[in-house]
Image (cartoon, rainbow, N blue to C red; front, side, top):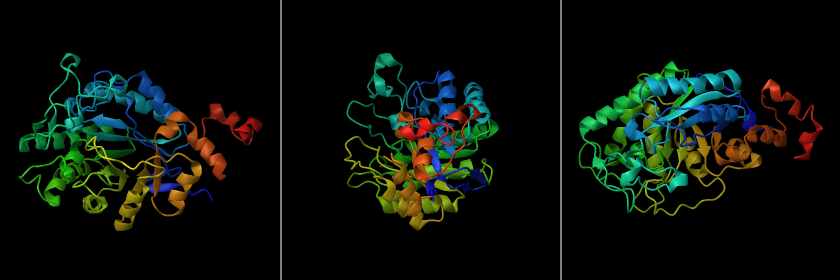
Length: 364
């Protein structure tokens, strides 16, 4: 039995299988607006064999974008542009479509990876960055402005407004970005949060921003449509977040009505020594699954069909998200299903390449 390709019901959403295309930044937007690249990319991902495709990290305000090329969902122009891409997925794709929304915090105003990935220089149109505390991300990065309580309220409301826009254009699922050193994670981690007010100090204080964002979004996102958060399983740094913090945070998210978490790690500081290896973040997902009743998604160097299927079969997670593997092979799900003895939906235009009707499929 191919556990990875079993149907799965997430909240009120029926997924064809448990394979998810993780959100992957394309750094190709025009002033926050999706364009033809996003249409082509997302339709391709929606025909990969996965049951769900999650659109890349999308800024809830212009200052919340990572780079000049990052998507946004904060005004009518960005909503209209993204609506076109979503409509294309729904017309031509086989998968459900979700989105990840968030705010880059002190990691905003940076170069695209192929431009160097550093903080924008003065001649690259940088913008002011914000964080829970005025601590630069790294040497050579600007000192972010410390968010006031009023700023926090604005950004919290911006998440809810982005969720409303996502709902209006037909998103099936929504994920809040609470990992990788971006704003919500930087509030949660003691490495980047040195506040002494209600949003800092104790674990309860540091969790407050993320939980308030979750409550604000849950207030506008309908029950039955999956709502979750990508969270951090570990900071990989002494004095940082550990797996027990992730379990506590996930329990609090569950209490506020969220349906799932995707468990990642790292990103809050470049100097962290991350022990990267096949499935290196899966133990974090397994711990959260054991400690909550939430649906849990595992991610992180999951590259082979047997590996992905084993994660589900062994009960370590309810879903598996792949990223670079599907960039390398846009039909990863087709090929994985073939190796595991399962079948996935394909566009009718590509049906003649299925193993049942094309002998060449067996030559891979």
